[in-house]
Image (cartoon, rainbow, N blue to C red; front, side, top):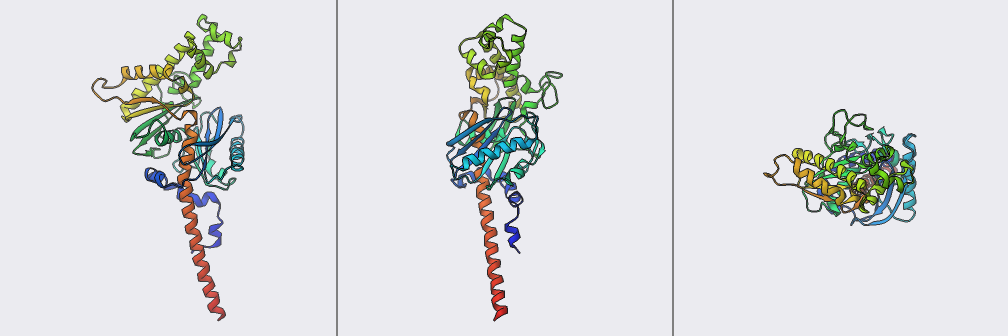
Length: 381
């Protein structure tokens, strides 16, 4: 029998069984989820984005800040998230919060098990934020949320077998089949960036060497440019002059900008990154055989300077090339906001189930109160 204590239990504990039912019903659920505004949070190695998103994927308002010093306690990042949500809630009627985290999230979508570019280690992010915010909270991997957004609103619409690759500080990945994100038994599927492609290669923040993201990511792009500049290579004179000799000021967006202006070294670096990208995509095609690869993340802003070489390398390395259908490779349409939009949209599913569960608890409590009142009336008669 329900009691008043059941209704006043901590939000996180009430929502846990509700969250476990969401994953198996995503395809059907998004069609009937409440059309209410939700907040999406995208946490990367360098930035935190927060935005209010409506049911059609439109961003009503967005805030952005740098990721706090990752050497500090995880609470610093949690404080930043809470502040952004509360700021947006002052101007919008927010019904739920979805968080796309750059790390491994467990199957219950509560704990960030490991984040290579942040200090989270087995961090109960959902429960900690749920105790601070007055709305339901959902946590997922940021590539999963980006893939969901592209399937719902962007380049992946109409695709039943989609693989998302996000190129940012590192490489994230996600698999979406028949309208459902495939998270694996333990919730950590899609970590393509940490596939080993060069045994004994560059050291990765994850602890291994030779990971794919060490050869095809924003970090890889900047590392190569800075190494050439530090060596005072003649091909790097253009970018050295651009940063006035301050090699530490070289960034990924700067390299992309110079490549568009025709800087030969920057064009070559993006070609190298793109070729490594194509090799990895060919390997994923051999394993997963999707109909479409969607390339997102900040580095994808280079567009054909990156994706053109990736398509060529994909065709050269695809197993059974010439005798099998080839997956489409396309740039994400929602840009760097995809993870945020997807997190907000997935949160709408939790908002609906949370509201239904809460209504059922209230109804049970009301029935109990009527029964108790009838008992009291009978005892006093």
